[in-house]
Image 1: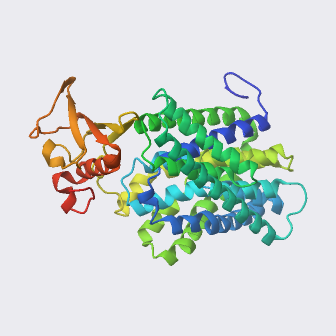
Image 2 (image 1 turned 90 degrees about the vertical axis):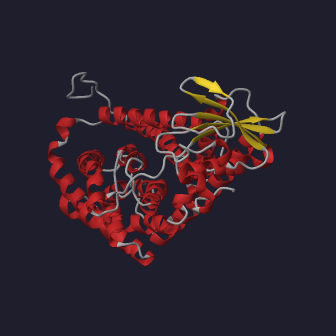
Length: 454
């Protein structure tokens, strides 16, 4: 579509691309946060934080050194390249990892790292792209720490307040819940930025809090957020494709490949080893996480920051980053499942989780839970009375192959069934926990350590 393409559209508005790219990144981080399960990332939080902070610093230093000596760029420009490509891309990581059955520690570490490291990298790129020398590195580190702390505090507060409000206020239409969730996520970004904190960290943490709060109409909200995330990614790639001028890329292909090779084979593995060895992470997992440092559209968006700020050789920086990201994402992404199998880290998927949607019944002080039993759920073959729901909760209707009926205690549940469960306010959470436990562990879930009330 762009210059040198079929449409031959001349587009060189880096500022517009950056603004729209930031908006798209907010949506992508919100979608990633909503889909992040706290129980998976909680054990991996220290290691993920180390990768997102110390790991980024190591990667920036090694990559910038290679960029300086390979391309002949000044140190400021080399540091910009190092910072831009040192952030793993949240969209790429989320889309690839959720299709591969990996140990929860690996998935949790990579997802949390990709959600956390955008914030410090944006701060570094902006600092390196600002006119004038970067003085007093320790002051810069202090500013980064302060911005991250402010963003984290605001994100957690907005996420908690938003979750509390959505669970205690009945909106007039179910379709408003997904819109409200995304609006709260954007509010976290705006509040964090206005407070001179990291809005990107704020939106990710606020979304993660809401994603683990069992909000009403949750499946619809996840579907809505997933759709918005895809639209944001598509929009980003269209704009970035228009901004690139293909005939200018020729001289930058070789430097991009060399810098990418250093990043992939030296900088990323070194940062992983230095950050994860103290946590006694096995070498197989370290190897996979070294190769799983995926880059996507986000580094290319960050490369527009020096263009907007008028940094010398900023167009060359953009071209190198573009080639590097495209080539190495095409190599790393498809080979991840193969590497996981070779390292014996890829296993069989866990039992499919239930789709549980909750609709609050304010006047009746109760909740209506709609439960879908997917293929792979261990609720298949369980009788209704074997669910052992807490007192105050009951299965009132079963929809099977388009036909609905009131179940008997001995009715056997099957894959594809949809259940209607009524629960009072006090036992709503316990009922959902029990349903999910049976979905993962079958009728003996309470005795097999998978949680749930007996």
